[in-house]
Image 1 (cartoon, rainbow, N blue to C red):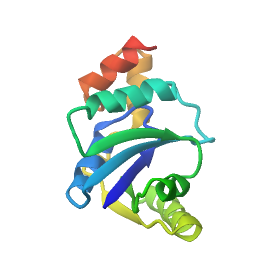
Image 2: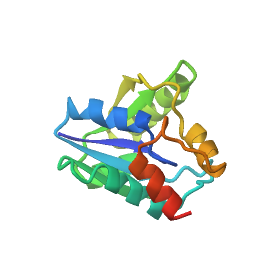
Image 3: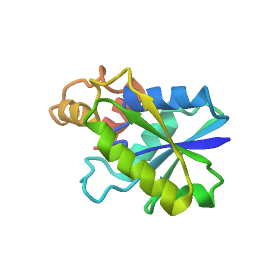
Image 4: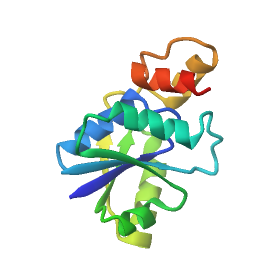
Amino acid sequence: MKCAVTGTFDPLTYGHIELVEKALKLFDEVVVLMLVNPEKNAEYSHEVRLDAIKEYFKNRKNVSADYYEGYAVDYCNKNGIGCLIRGIRNKEDFPYEKQMAKFNLEKGGIPTVFFFSDCSHITSTKARQKLINNLSAEEFIPDTVEKKLKENK
């Protein structure tokens, strides 16, 4: 079965990578699905973020990346994806994630699998703050991602 790890990935962090790795233990294929969140203004263009994700996972045959401007469930139903993957970092994440899982199941029949994060201290916001200040974000993001973002800023 194919699943999707969704997010804005601004930028891709070790926390996102952890979700992909956990998903691969249960699913045959993982799509890293970048979505638009109208409540967020991305620091990096979706093209740059998508390129960084593809570069990082380029040697993984069962991981692909895509960008979509609609609902995750619509993408999943159009592309044969049977499940969404989301991470829970802390108790503050859970109410929002539960609401989204309910929406995705009711709107499109797509269930959500939750993984508790071992990287709860890692956020895209912390990585962006480092990068904006021209500091290394190596504790939050892989070198390949940092390089791609800095090349295209």
